[in-house]
Length: 391
Figure 1 (cartoon, helix red, strand yellow):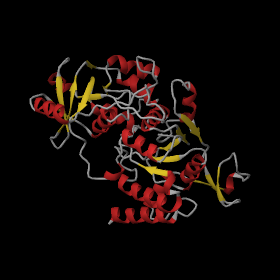
Figure 2 (cartoon, rainbow, N blue to C red):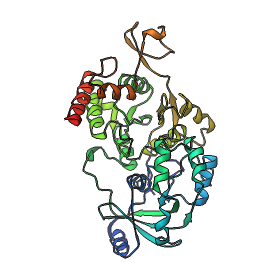
Figure 3 (cartoon, rainbow, N blue to C red):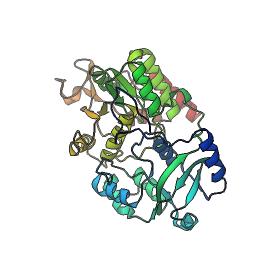
Figure 4 (spheres, one colour):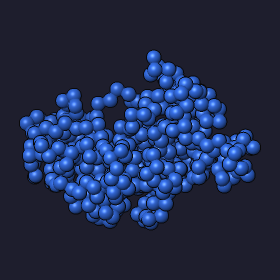
């Protein structure tokens, strides 16, 4: 277990650390060579990293059957602690017999490297339609989260994990900070009140507007873009990171902003994922979390502000991190500035609404996003990336 001083407490009271070190690591690695192996999917790997480094505190492993149904039905762990999405390890029924209850297995990367050891304390076949209906609010397998859940396998394995080897990466290395490391950075900067911004898109002008309003209220801004698995039509993480760095270099006060990637896979679970994202940012050390329009949404599965309303179902004792709820921001042609309906006197015809979807559509059509959409430096990066992709 890890703890830090002067910052918000991790969800559940302690920051989890399931990473093995030194001699214990070598001993478990030797043992793991002789265990049944399970090759992890991209989503499994993202979840494994988030569990073992404390991003998903207080989880110490993939959820068991009791925790699974408690989360699905009540949005809480067995203990009553807020938790909205079951973090599961699924296997196809055709190979489930390889993994026995009350045994250990080695969890491996697709490249064959042993990443972790798991003790199987639960093995069950859940009602996945119920999971889809409760977590994603739809059983439609056109929904990317539902589709991914169905694709992962019918049998669920639960139990604690121990990380033997770090997840192998060759990108964003200087921006892959664990909660332990972000908390250390916040303390170095003497930040006590930190607002987190979650995104899977480049930061457009509306995002910049709400993050800067939020920054007026706190000591620092934690830009924490999700770089795990996303939809195939989302802008690649490598391109988005270039955009974030360009913006930070010119348009944000560099001594008040920290950029670090969020390794989680995107589930597109809308309201429930907003809570999960907030909890993760509390574990990173943040006191506030920005929730804008259609957070973690996709298509028209969720209401515009459903991800804000769900926070009203939890008390401040259940969720220590505070949501900062923002209306849909737009560019107002009358005032020639960013605004929301709360601050702008303009009519609908004088409002240019921005979204990641619109930016992607413009790029696909060979159009450069105008200044009302994106800063010119960001637009240039996006256009260049689209040109390379189409070359």
